[in-house]
Amino acid sequence: MPVLNRIAGFAEEMAGWRRHLHAHPELAFACHDTAAFVVERLREFGLTEIHTGIAESGLVAIIEGQGEGPTIGLRADMDALPIKEETGLPHASTNEGVMHACGHDGHTAMLLGAAKYLAETRRFRGRVALIFQPAEEEGGGAQVMCREGLMERFGISEVYAIHNTPALPVGHFQTTPGPIMAAVDSFDIHVKGRGGHAAYPHECRDPVLAGMAIGQALQSIVSHNHYALQDLVVSVTMFHAGTAENIIPDTATIGGTVRSFDPDVRDMVERRMGEIVAGQAASFGVEARLDYRRYYPATVNDPDKAGFAVDVAREISGEEAVQAEGWREMGAEDFSYMLEERPGAYLFLGQGESAGLHHPAYEFNDEAAPYGASFFARLVEKAQPLA
Image (cartoon, rainbow, N blue to C red; front, side, top):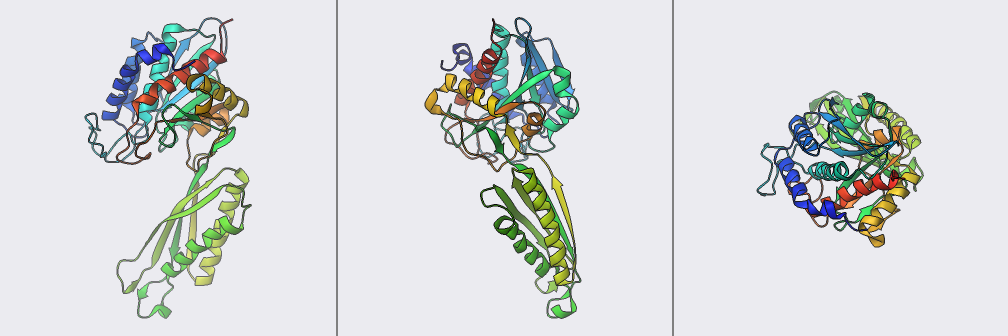
């Protein structure tokens, strides 16, 4: 079975929705106009059970099937990024300094496409919960929705999501059982020394020298403190200190990110980072404080649900266009919170050659939308078939 014919028939309509959303991007939890647009479309499809104001601007719409059955959740993220767009397209962002540089406009359009089809056909048992989520990029909107009782309130038994990727041809799918995207943490290290004239360093306690040593020593965590076959990234991405060439400053600040999959590895990194900071500070005679912050956990697919999703994707795109045991990403995704509460799967959908995600020249490929919408629709029909 290829892309569903009915969905292919309104591909241009999906493209129109997507381009409207692209022209009017919103950040984090403030996706109010986006949510209003989504609600307007859902009402046009005949849906009446629409719950708004979840995680501030998120919403859930329910489609009733034919007969009793479970509720399956389908999620799309709605928020954009604080990036100045450089595409020059007719539907480029009208919100200066904000753009859909990660394709969430496309994700929303795909779920709307699936909603239109499912509302028309209803060839499934039970219910579908359409989850339109704010604040994936920053703020953990999925976590907030879960804290507000998303799964319990709507009786969701399993949950699925798609993210576009320029790394695959249009219409190709990729996923993997178990961990698929990393946990993300960040850190700041505040070093306090004693500044003075750079010609007399012996009278100072140089926080720059200590900070450089700390930054170098942090790399030993990856190379010497964990098993080489476990995925781990520790990246120092910021170093702020000083105001002039001939002044040793009083303070320095180091910042960066940690990516991992195993909770024990995550614990080890935080512990070793604290030990390194304390030890290096002592050796240089300065004070240092580690501020370590844990954010999204690893995104972990349920093996059975991932296998089921692969079967559905193969119906849509064909055997050769679906990677069932693909790569794991060191990027992070707050859909992880939903997968902590319910079994499900997260998949990547190819959109062909384009600028990379989070790039000011990125543009979602509308040719990919019918594949994503068909996947969502067929997944529901296959998971909850009519007797």
